[in-house]
Image 1 (cartoon, rainbow, N blue to C red):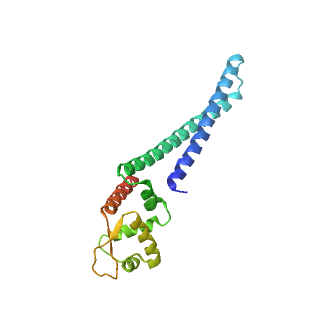
Image 2 (tube, one colour):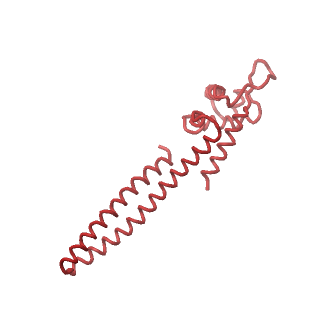
Image 3 (cartoon, rainbow, N blue to C red):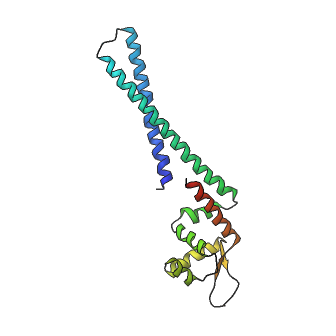
Length: 181
């Protein structure tokens, strides 16, 4: 599970629990206060009310922080989605480069292809098996993020970034700057 999703679900659970606790204690204190006005307050009942008020205050602070964390996480998720949708790229490209298995390798390939390279050079540069690089190259070609360079040697294909590939790298750099404080 991604850290952002853990933050969202964790904050939601904590916020609901402590908001419920706060409401329950508020209700029980109001019941005690109602009984107090009907009958004189006994000396042993006072510490119970003080403890409940202390717990109610702590619950309200924890619930407020949890709701704030949930709002911040959802706002960040919305900002990322907004920036990506304004870029005119399909969500499948976002999944390919950010969410899917192997996305970090594909990002490294895009970053490495600032100059034309063949598959073997990429594999050596990234420290990967050339078959793995081959699969990633095929995916990136199908999405139009890289292309075959116009020909130095007819037997060896060199690959370079397309304009879309450069734009995606810039966009992902912008998103990474949003995520780091």
